[in-house]
Length: 332
Image 1 (cartoon, rainbow, N blue to C red):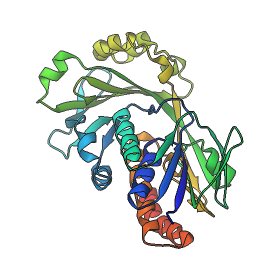
Image 2: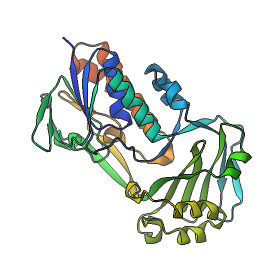
Image 3: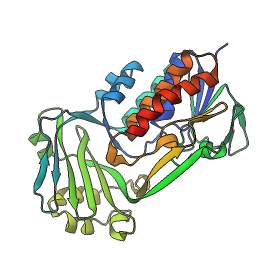
């Protein structure tokens, strides 16, 4: 008889875990509290560990088809002077998070998995049950909490060891990519930049042929920097040479999708309790400056399924998974 998993959260880690378990003969249901599968964060750089997982899931080609290669990375100061040029270094691919979520959800559905939207999880029970806000209770061989850094699943099984709230945070958004930008880079490639002015920073780079990902970062308490909708006049004063990009922000209409979020680091007592396992930001949220939060979430969700495939004893499999993966993630 097939083992069954109930998963809280249809982000990267939840969907990767779902597909990997389905491929190994499990039945899976994923619960997403929002009415639509819409990823927060907009753009992400895919490193080699992420690429290998997507390849193992059979999803790499579909995901990379809409990616763009960042062949040059610049660091600039408030005057626009280049202080670092990483042209010729190992390139990464940037891709829309929404493309990844849509691809993985379609893959899960094709394998017979269920993704239930508008299905808000309230808690989990170590004995193997997921409880929804409406009171419904779903039993399973494995419960996975992939519900973000404010995870209800994690809190209900008392696994949080440390939450470090950092001094800075960011908002993330997508704007159209200009024709001049496309013409300046080779076909299928883009130049990314990290732009600093005092304690404000803008990460800027294409995540598709016609889309640019922007992250506007500042210290907590910087009211102009934190404001949503973006106070573009304040950002123009800090980084005047990005004026054209800020003009494009002014036309953004989906402000309901944009929020300023303070960076956090999450550490757990352990990654599982009973039949409940915690993955992704719920287990090891890290500031995006490290560039590995999403890739580690992808890697660890996949490795969870691999560890359980080789062990019929769930507790042995969960212990092996954490012993193998946690040191690597915390080193990152």
